[in-house]
Length: 107
Image 1 (cartoon, rainbow, N blue to C red):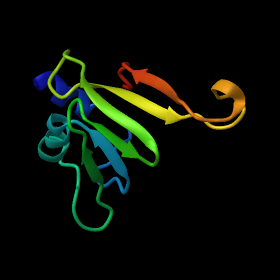
Image 2 (image 1 turned 180 degrees about the vertical axis):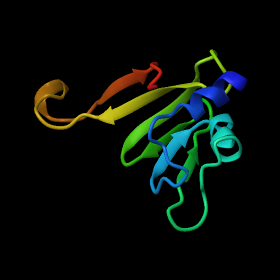
Image 3 (image 1 turned 60 degrees about the horizontal axis):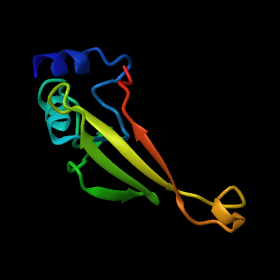
Image 4 (image 1 turned 90 degrees about the vertical axis):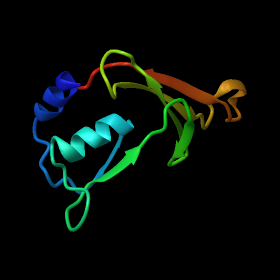
């Protein structure tokens, strides 16, 4: 877990007050709050959305599933299911989904 804490401390430009939303695992959320001291209440606070492992959530019409990455505590891969629209979709009439598996480290 120490390596995850050190990784979080190296996030360039992430201020303690970050008035936006971060989607992450439970472990990463705890690290951001307790070790990085990210402000999650009051003015200028960040909203942390804890993604349950292996459960599909819909965020702004996009399916998101957090899958264990198994390389350090809290690390996840994100499976996105984006609805297809328009002529580019199968059959030209819309429908279907575009599936993206994000496996990379964004540091």
